[in-house]
Length: 161
Image (cartoon, rainbow, N blue to C red):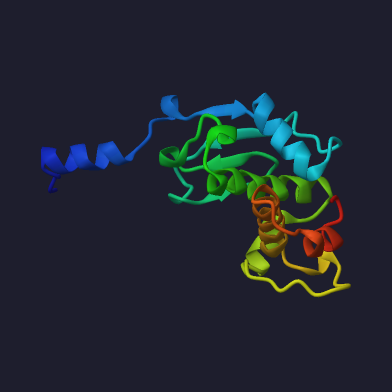
């Protein structure tokens, strides 16, 4: 039986995040305000936790059960103090939490349709778009709003705006 040299073992060990180092936290006050500014005050984020999970690919996040999971290397202590891109990432993931609260099958929907790109079509219902397309729409709305751009096409489609 062969074994790895010590240098390779250290390299592998540095890639792992022990369970004791896994992080978990609720949304803070500013993040809640940011969420409510998009989804409305009735959006229940009281049980949402941001967590790290070793199985999430770097630069990805998943929200299968009302919590949002990040790769440990992507952990952010306060999204409200980050760039617009990072803030919009949280809004995208919170859209999946909102979808789950509406009774949508988020995991199944994401497995069936991984498309993120969309084309807004006047009169087309929000729920006729895929799970990821809906989240991208809300994310795009948030970015446009924060940049002071016209959001009327998104407001006409997204039901909680």
